Length: 292
Length: 273
Ligand SMILES: Nc1ncnc2c1ncn2[C@@H]1O[C@H](COP(=O)(O)OP(=O)(O)OP(=O)(O)O)[C@@H](O)[C@H]1O
Ligand SMILES: [Mg+2]
Image 1 (cartoon, chains in turn brown, purple):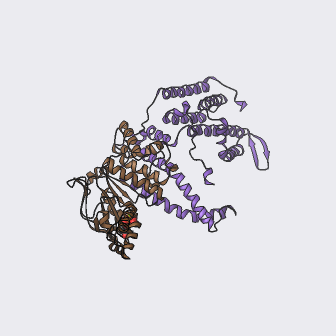
Image 2: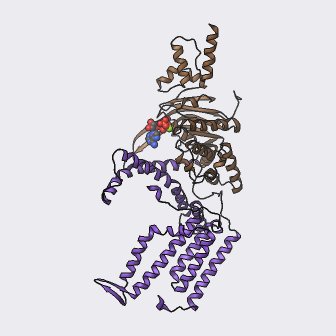
Image 3: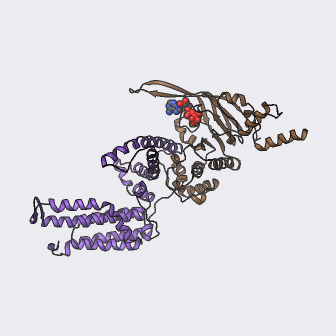
């Protein structure tokens, strides 16, 4: 594992968020607490995955990290800036970039390279450096050859990679991806997850990946499981997926292989907990066979 | 069926006209249109014809393609011309039932026909040779002085470019919703106009819902990428005037001067028109 004494890039303490509904006269008529005291500590360079059933507050949490929502309780520091401090909003957004679920609704320009340049333009980066950043960002996600294309001609996975390039052109320390693969086919999903992992490993970008797909979680350094606005589990993927029963209680699945291994174990095959890949399973089964 | 509408059509090319700064082209189009209405004489139209012929030739856009652009507005033109023809008071030359054609009416109608045709040709050369993006850029930079009068130029340009990005997406979506509803028995193609319009209503609801969701998403995405209006923004592709742009401005000035000279010094007898 990585050095333990890394700097924290995101530190949330007792985070709360309450959605307010207003009636016709503009008075609050109901409220819904989507985050009920979340503690969060993400170190620089980590790959964090966040899991949770629909409505568990994942998106609400993600939007806090980008100062799109401001906590209604508790504190949140992103790269040392308090997100409640209005003067630091742009610093926060620059430190933690955000990729959303729908690839179409986050691409602003009708030319790929111009879209990637949008963030740096907003930051006031000089023209020459914008081009440099756009080139690097598009190369990093492998979309350089499409720089002159219209986003409408790209596949879902490609669009999402353009969206990622648009974020990394802002040179953030951290990228928050809110279900970036939910609308993609399996090919597009592995394209996007592959790109994200590569950015994490090679460029050292901190990644916070929110997802419904368990297979995308197994490479994370740490998994955070949310339910009803709270963090209910946290640990390495292996630790988390060893707790099949607990996950089922909060309506979450485990990767298919883990499920299979779990079922085999239930019916008497002596396998260890938390098997994550097909390779691991065949190896374990091979060992059993050798013993006989 | 919606794909047939080509919006802001661009005719790809690499001619000098294509490469001109969009501000120059916007200005040129404006000068041309104003000249049509300010100098209405045979000689002025001849000069305008010459000017447009030069531009079309250098732009390397086939004449046929340009004339095709006139087709959709032909009916509108016809109506305008007919109105002018029949409703201008003056010396009657021909009378049938309650309709009468006057000499002034004929003159007006011819003027209108020439002006409208040239107006459409002129502005379509602009859209044929300029990508929508650079057109918006040109508007934003070229009209930047309007900021002084509190016209939100940057915001309008941003709206235009977002519209250009989302029109194809929304059209696709309309097509999809139509097909989904057709599969369930809706009929958009038969019946009178009223029936067809009525059939479109259930289309609008899902379309609006989706458009608002997209708008909401996009606003979030723009905010998260640090967008906070035009102030303090830099440009990835700033507009820079080159020598050819200066030359084009000079050509425009020469055109205007010639127009003025024609007005005062060349008198072609009015009774031709
Ligand atoms: N704008 C809003 N106004 C009121 N309540 C909201 C709003 N947005 C979300 N909520 C509520 O807050 C809770 C958490 O929502 P959130 O979007 O964070 O969940 P999520 O974990 O991202 O779910 P999903 O997996 O569906 O994306 C949900 O119960 C939701 O209904
Ligand atoms: Mg969500």
